Amino acid sequence: MKILVIGSGGREHAIIRRLAADRPAPELHAAPGNPGIAQLATCHDVSVGDLDGQVRLAEQLRPALVVIGPEAPLVAGAADRLREAGMTVFGPSAAAAVLEGSKSWAKEIMAAAGVPTAASVTVTAAEELAAGLDRVNPLGDVPYVVKADGLAAGKGVVVTEDRDAAVVHAEAVLTAGGQVVLEEYLDGPEVSLFCVSDGTRVVPLAPAQDFKRALDDDEGPNTGGMGAYSPLPWAPEGLVDEVLEQVARPTIAELADRGIPFVGVLYCGLALTSRGLRVVEFNARFGDPETQVVLERLTSPFAPLLLAAARGELAEDEQLSWSEDAAVTVVVASAGYPAAARTGDPITGIRECESHGAHVIHAGTAEADGELVSAGGRVLSIVARGADLEQARTRVLEATALITLEGSHHRTDIARRAAEEATR
Ligand code: AMP
Ligand code: GLY
Image (cartoon, rainbow, N blue to C red; front, side):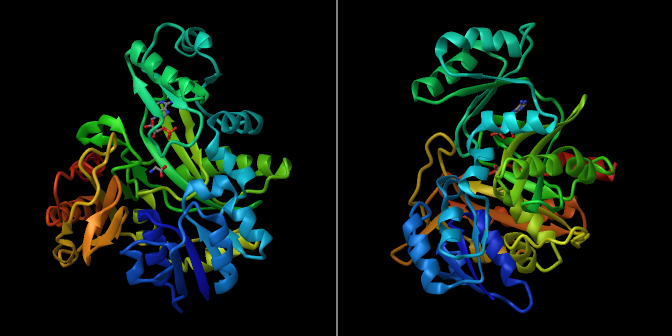
């Protein structure tokens, strides 16, 4: 089977790596891909933003399936364009991807579907800010949660105890022409659950936890994600079923009722708060870097799952199988990420890292004069598995230490707490 994957990041490398492990192995193509992907797939020089180029490439290759990785082309209508050209596509239409593209619309869908989420107010002008903050944080209770309404690569959110800082971020978003969503603060651990949907049916993958802050102990600014692990030994029993019943199925049904079938991955970003399960955010695609650990554990065939969803033919009782192993990934970020990522620095040590029981997912790399260099904020995502989280964690950290990239930083506490609790 011929498959074309659109994207150039760690998520797409992980998707391609997992597709390549299916038997029989599919014939893999990527647009544009990256140097890591190029080891497993034929890369085509068509950028993520070039929808015309993607359609032309698909018409040339005639793949059995096109998988769209990132949110930007989905929101821009890549899936619609490819479907119009007769392709079988895994990824939601532009209309359905608004679930990620607009936090205020996602809130409206959740309200209509009865999905639990943080109380919120959407603000469109600076004059409404003070009243909005007073409504969402009525007793001056903190922290404040201020979100840019549109796509922001995970960086549009500020969580702060400082009202002035909340106002500054909100005003910056408004001045840039955006809307602001003010939200009630959700306490409790976060969980990412990817639900594959064919527009009506929903199949959950294994839950994972992402680490959004740049620095250890959840210090520093929000990022796209600095590491992840799966499974979650601490998660309450029945969590996945609860998310399916309370969140994923009602959301997919609400969209279907509105004539906007969602075909692809509904990424449920959840907080397990003291008052119960709440949705923090929806995304319209696989998460990055959670995909790296979730797919590492998937033992069922992957391509047939994506193809069945793309065709609207998921089985009602589809049961996926999972390795008992734990998987942990640590992201190596470039100097200055997330504020201002430096690029063009040489990367060495990948072979050493991989002979140390880990594998290296390329997230933001490029080749320059035959040398591998950094080309983005999140540069590599190192993945290791183990019999348990502690073993996977130790392996991934030892392997990560063998990578050299000047000025780079990575977290050393990914899965630490979960591993400690699991052995207690
Ligand atoms: P989002 O882009 O909406 O996923 O937000 C990015 C990150 O900000 C989340 O993963 C949380 O860590 C944090 N965050 C977002 N909304 C809230 C909230 N209402 N309460 C607490 N933390 C939040
Ligand atoms: N890791 C968070 C995201 O993919 O949005």
